Length: 198
Image (cartoon, rainbow, N blue to C red; front, side):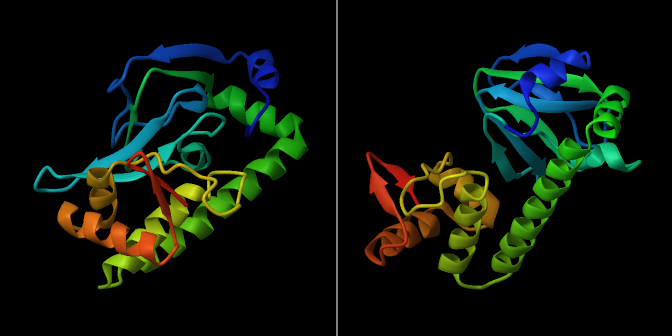
């Protein structure tokens, strides 16, 4: 958990519940709140000029949602959509800034978290420029696992369907299915009940 729930509540955070597919914020809207997931998952996506969905990340319990935009005067470059029944703690931008000013250790934790996310995003983007589907898929799966504390092999259940992996990597679903089978033979991942573990 990035920031303790009780600390957020003490600064005025409110709990909000969302049904699956509820839009929490839209691309081009102005960031006004800090969001932290208490339960459920949120996907960050974008639609290209052809209307095709590109999934940039799926965020789990304990993670914050696009908090980096609270530090700059820019609009959201993505949509945040509840992936399933989801509960978040929502704190106004001004209260979030006050919390950081009054809690230096939290500010350091946020900086570390942002640095880790940015590093992993660079790696994923670098992999996504590869012409090799296995490199693209490994990059996307490693990026998803980077949100987990457990780094041991096959400990992380990838929260993505083959279609969603195709959306992230800009590959065809058939290519993703074929490449995932190849990666399983190479012992990079494991498939249990159609779920992918890395």
